[in-house]
Image 1 (cartoon, one colour):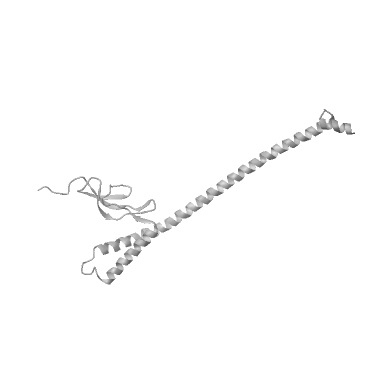
Image 2 (cartoon, rainbow, N blue to C red):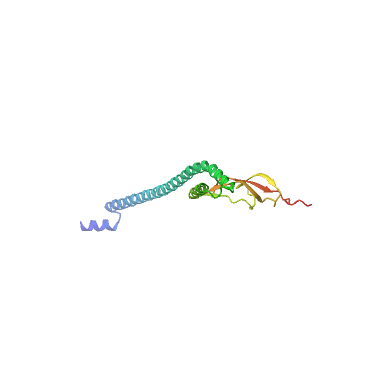
Length: 181
């Protein structure tokens, strides 16, 4: 009996040795198949994690954009009021400029400006700048340096990197403002 086992262990071609070889080969094949499945599951898991991270990123970006658009709607409704307030303060009669209620109106204008700043709204610098059709809307030309903004008719504003209202400007046409006499 011990002799037969020795033959089986040696794998000398006896029926018992052949059955053991087939079992080992079968187990190796099963092992390779399971390794393939494990790699497939691991790859699927990695893709799922990446998809989830992309989903989270897109969701956060969408949330930020929605908040910005909600602010944008409010800002677009407030800007004309702010413009009127600034225009009124700019064109005050000198007789009433020092009155307390006028100072109160100035304080209200400063608060409006603070609220706009807090919302990420910034004024577009225009006067004296090169005309930029992405930021400025030319409504007329007048004598002055060519393609330079010589006067701002209505202020423009940006929110983040988005123009929410272009500045309405008058652009120089390259002629001198002096009349030779």
